[in-house]
Amino acid sequence: MHLSFYAVIGIGAIIDYFLTWNTKIPIGKFNKLALCLIIFGVTIEILQAFSGYRQGEFSDIVANSLGVFLVWLFVKFF
Image 1 (cartoon, helix red, strand yellow):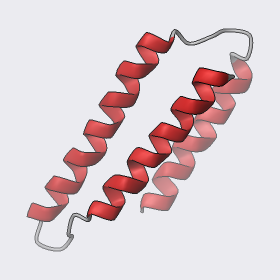
Image 2 (tube, helix red, strand yellow; image 1 turned 180 degrees about the vertical axis):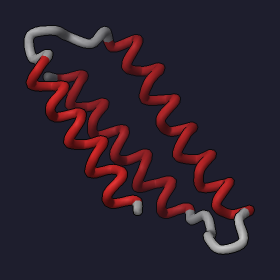
Image 3 (spheres, one colour; image 1 turned 45 degrees about the vertical axis):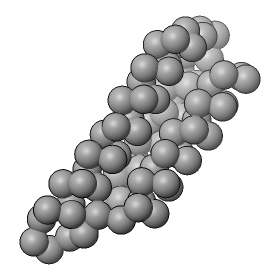
Image 4 (cartoon, helix red, strand yellow; image 1 turned 180 degrees about the horizontal axis):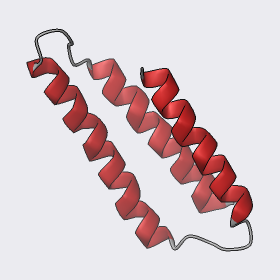
């Protein structure tokens, strides 16, 4: 489930990047988006911990946050 979800998001981001290659995202707006994505990932893991058939894992929070950070670096420097 995670793989397909993040794969679709990644493909969408790549398509969006190539369609808008000549425009820059203001880094301030992207910082807010990155923070929202990290909060979303943490919230999902907390909610999974309360479900009966899934468990939240700290490693998923780290992996999701690392993914956001890597994209943040890409946007900041390119």
